[in-house]
Image (tube, rainbow, N blue to C red; front, side, top):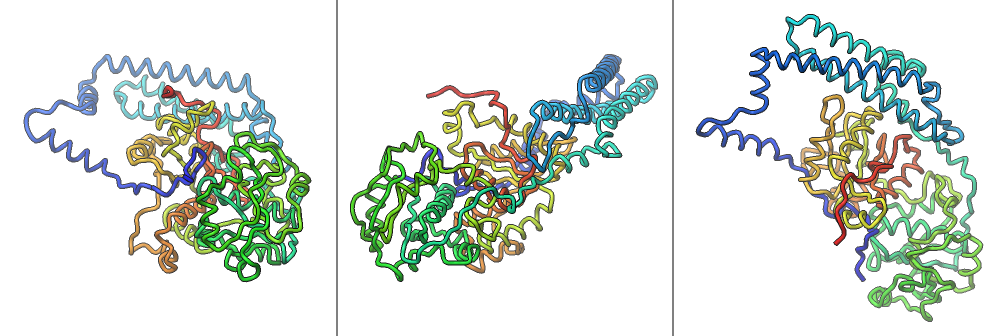
Length: 543
């Protein structure tokens, strides 16, 4: 059975190294132009010549621009002071997590106004620098417009104690961490399994991100049914112990609640007494003959046929309560297998709370291995620093997948760049970590368009192996440097440690990052899906 589907979101098996060739191409093109004959003037040359000649029409245009800029500033100031209440600029109560939609809209409008004022100031400064120095009246008007723009900005910021009109101060406060205390978890269940009762995890849909989410749900099932969870063999599933610390799960619970397949075979005869399918349609358990053959190849005997306790369709999963699961899946069988539960909609609010539904003493049960966490920290210290934005940009295979949704989640690069720039403005971050499967043609264009305050914001990807760099030495020392799943988990870990995260809507890779940020307490008030609330400004027709 093919693992690839529209919901498979491991975006990192085919990461394309980013080598910037734009400068070399431009240099070659310049040499070809200057090689012979008279080359046409560039637009930069035309503007320079026009400036030297003191074209009266250009000065007239400058005056028109000044008048328009001053008018816009006055109109913007009048609008803001007449129709907004700056006391509602920060209506968010972090202790209760309740938002007033109208206040949020007002706050977003004021932030947007501040952004426009900053852009106007930059434009006016540029105009002042290029204006005719002999025209004192024109220069005075521009300087007055700059001063008025700054006064409006200071007035907007003054109720928030920002002192000097600094958007960076506003950004740092705007993107503060979300207070999600594990001690305030509303509902948890103890996991105290019987030593002779086992639950064999079956996770087959999608790729690694889907499987990790499926594995976390299996833990909930095992806790409800008082069973030890058996981690599948890497010959049947992924090699989980390369990306997560399985033994740490037992440490977090203070008892043995999960065992590897090899440990299971030592304790119990490799036999599945009852094979239960959570979903009955379109295919029971999402299991085909190939996977049944793999289980038998591991020496696992399967007793009875695949069965389902209810009628459940993967495409339309029903909301289920834990009482239903206990009633339908309980039994005295020594070993049961349940599959596939990735799409199961079971006690959503209970499962999605920080730390998950199971009572334990750690921040989260499923997290990257210690080697991957340390490598991520070393990469951040080397290339990014404390304050950085992480962007998961899913592109490969996402165009058709997103266009089948309403609204679509596949955005043109220029529109995506505009959305990213707005978040950078709010977060005041100097660099963006880019986790993507996009081609260099797309990432190169994106890099050129992410500009804030006239500065290009660098997009950083993990570079190819370089012996002079030591940030990834732990992976090489333990022989896991070329594992695609390790690379994917390393990307997730770096994104989970960022100041602000921008995710891809519809991607389980993004959802797993959001889970880690929620459980680790790194979630930001500025975390969001790319271009949230917007529709693509252009959508291709169906085939």
